[in-house]
Length: 300
Image (tube, rainbow, N blue to C red):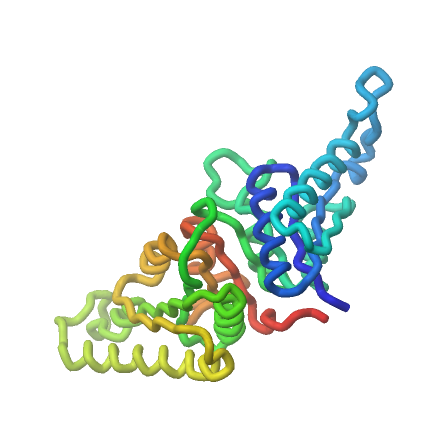
């Protein structure tokens, strides 16, 4: 089985952008594209067909089928030679796309859909999939046609291997450099608190240098294996003393894709989605791929 790239669509412009990006991803991966529209109305037992008093192409089912047809047209316009199909799947969007992720190579969704509330920066579907999807999830947000390197957040967490692999593979597929960013300020102050207080101790150059050396070692060791497996990827490894969230948001303004793990070094047991990945889904200025542990391998 050639696991597809799956794109969720609801007729919104955000979802149509996701379909176009999903088409490009499918071409790069040599995968078919599957466009899915979660059709909730049959669950409510309302009439689905055209009204006898209205136009023959009216009704909820015809509208949903038109949404799928438009999405397929956008995909084929973006990648004319791609193997593309689409389907109405009865169910809630969260459940439908989570189920689709079990047999997908990648799921691509927009950051907001038609059901989004004004003022929300990212929709519940994107957040839910990032936390529960069984393959990598790519959320389309930020700049139109974002260009630049693949930006990879590196924190040295054991669960981060899948995100590392995904980031290197994406850079190789796209023929782009990889910017690997590690921020060490997040765990500098917890290490340097005065005993029994919440205040940082006075600056100590030796402590600073030791922590910077440790951060450099962590970044170098995290990248060593992927660098061997992807020797053609040009890697720009960077340390940053900003807090990790503002550092990644700033770097995302010059990136074409941001790759983060679902949970990082500071995550609490039981949480499926960490604060950094959630912040990127809300504020990054380019598409964001969230990769859970074990999700880097295609589901063939």
